[in-house]
Length: 201
Image (cartoon, rainbow, N blue to C red; front, side, top):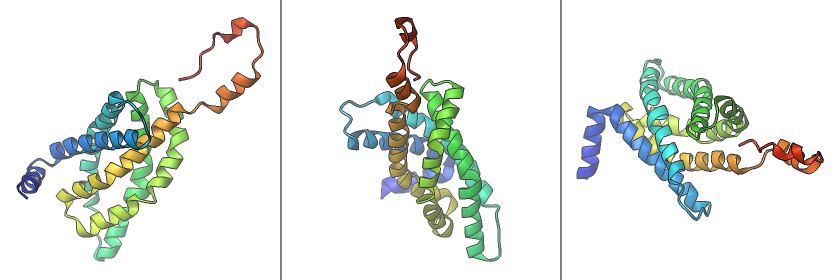
């Protein structure tokens, strides 16, 4: 109880710093969990570091501001107010924010901007449509029952499992060979000099 009380006090005094630390830790733990459940034998600590950095630098600060912006959406009917906030969050903010997250994740992996955007386009639809099965309900609970400074607690608990899935989804897509490469591998019958091309990373 004392630990929880100290956390709540710190969150109230320094919400942004607390959210940055918690988000980075939860995202890293989620990636470790994803690596474990998918049977990866050796811990890829650089991959975990990338997810922690992504959450701490590119997710927590924007969300800290965004939740306060949503607080300005007001309506005399409480149900209409909650649904308006959830709709704005999920159908206006979330599509763009998901795309930015996916691009930044690839950039952290050392991939060029053009390739990062291409891979985001491949992953975005699955990531966003999957998020719609989870986050609208989470945000309804947040906007109905959870005070502003404490919403991060619920978000981060759910984010542990969501980040695990996101980690699995994006890292699996890296390991899958592209259809273009498979076609090239099976149909190319050029002279030896033509075999100097490298597979796109």
